[in-house]
Amino acid sequence: MKRFLELFVKPKGWIWLVIAINFGGVIYGWFYYEYQLLSSPTYLWIFIADCPNSTLFVAISLILIAKNSKNDALSFFASCNALKYGIWTCFVILLYSHYFLSPERRLLYSCMFISHALLSLEAIPLAYTVKFERRFVITLFWLLLNDFMDYVVGTHPYMPLEKIELVAGFTVFLSFLSFISCYLISYHR
Image 1 (tube, one colour):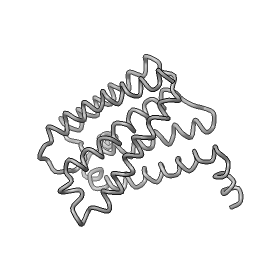
Image 2: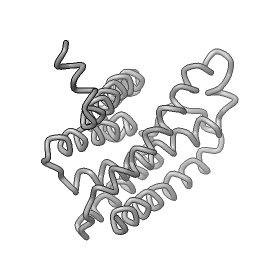
Image 3: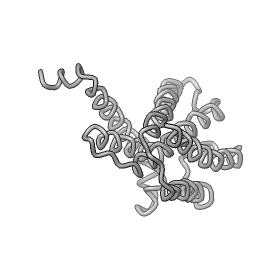
Image 4: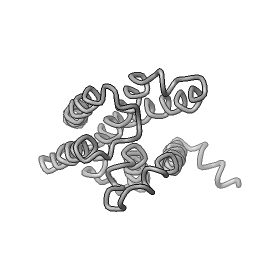
């Protein structure tokens, strides 16, 4: 127990707290998507649980940083996904506030709004650790493939379907915005 407490006293110990919180988010996120995952073919799962998967990439990136084994490609990928899906979730909760913030759902989705806002904020310092390379453009292709899967194939999260064209358009916009933002952050570090 003493060793555990010392971990959080040292400045580098905070990274382990953030990693633990992220893994908690991954586990809860996969649980949140349980019914959608179980009702979909397994080969589509990687396209369904966008936020928990993004959080997993952030956690793995942070572990590598903490162990002095940083992987710029993974950190850039994680930062773009975290920025995109953190903002996306906050946008969808606000857009469909009549549903997500109704009295019976308000506590859950208020907490989800805060946690996803924090997920998007995590992307900024993570992107700052990256030395960008042109090959990282594959991240943009992944983000756009995920958009195609969500809004053409239909793997987007369960939500009200009115204004779905607006959500789809905003999602594609976020793919470019996230990529460009993380590129600029990494470029100007």
